[in-house]
Image (cartoon, rainbow over all chains, first blue to last red; front, side):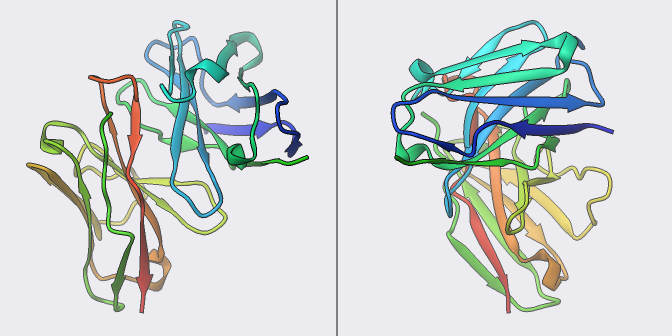
Length: 120
Length: 109
């Protein structure tokens, strides 16, 4: 059974750096084709893809946020970490961790999400 | 970058059929996936590769994709189908890797 869970601060101040950790179980990020990504959703708005890291450490970022994002993995700990610099109130959103299966470019398992509020 | 456009809302009576469209340039050449999101919950994959269903998803959910429009069809709509629905594609031709639609709120009357 695949599960993912996000952890990190619920409140950050403008200009600060956000660090979110995704801890997962039920699969290995060393399995060929597998990936873990981050997707966010501002309150009342649509889903927005942020970043994806593959089993082979290949990384992809949303073009509009690329300069602010870093995604890394620790396969031994079953964790993926997302950092986002220079946080702004418009970055207030629920941040989801997601599993990308080996067979298709989609999300088949999602974390429960964590709401991050950016406010002074 | 690639854009997916959905109607903001669709209303349907119980037992009737809801159709949710997802418009994109030549979307028929891509694989389209659909997610259902109920309030306060994470999205759930309900259709993948245009028309396939993950295990556990009722047959009432079906999909099609041709030309510039993909469609998610919910037959015999139930109150529990009330949710937001998002389409998604992988745009290999651009840096915006995973593209999500604008989302459609399905209201069961």
